[in-house]
Amino acid sequence: MNLIFGLNIHGYFILAIFWNLFLILIPCWTVYYMASSVGRKSWSKLTPMDRVAFILLFLFWLFWFPNTAYQFMLTRHLANYCVIWDKNRVCDHGSWLVTFFFTYALTGLPAFYYALNRMERLLAGVFSVRLSKWFAFLMIPLTTLGVMLGLFERSNSWDVLTQPLSLVQTALGYLQTADILAFFVIFTASLYVIYYGFGAFIRLIASKR
Figure 1: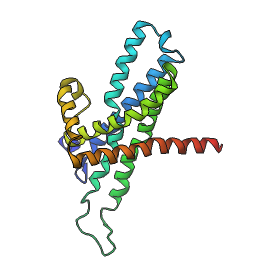
Figure 2 (figure 1 turned 90 degrees about the vertical axis):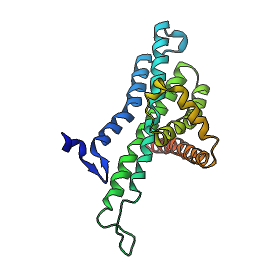
Figure 3 (figure 1 turned 135 degrees about the vertical axis):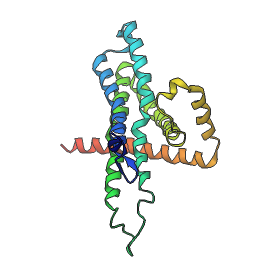
Figure 4 (figure 1 turned 45 degrees about the vertical axis):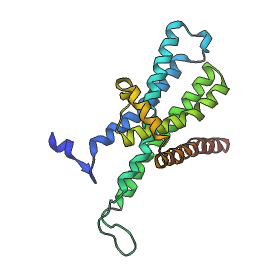
């Protein structure tokens, strides 16, 4: 058992791979279930119990969604992956790690786009298209804060329930520190490019069919 838990790639535990893949699927499954359950009903046509269930599932989705964007940060394990470089700055024995960690981090792209875009379309049907457009725009900065809490504080999604005030205070502190604020701006801008750029690419491909 210790052997299994100890298996790693460049110090990155193998079991963490499956765990992180599971985490990014949770918001995808959640929004898929919500969309399947609601169907084409608007908010006014939902029963009181359906509304309560919708709100609870939405909050559940909200707390777990940042895991999809956190997946992009896994490329950080490429830092100092090579001890000895050749004259062409190529690591002969570790160059495969570049492809591995890039592919691993890239699994967050479809999960990030699907979970956010599906929720956007769900809210458009339940409430209004205008609201859904603002939701996606505002959700990305919140996602950045979630990623930062996970990256810097090693916080988990369930910490929202156990220490919510502490997370809020820490997140607000990030916005008051120049170097961390720069990270917030850059990563938020990158997520905007990823989400809206990937969406435009998908629409372009679909229009060519």
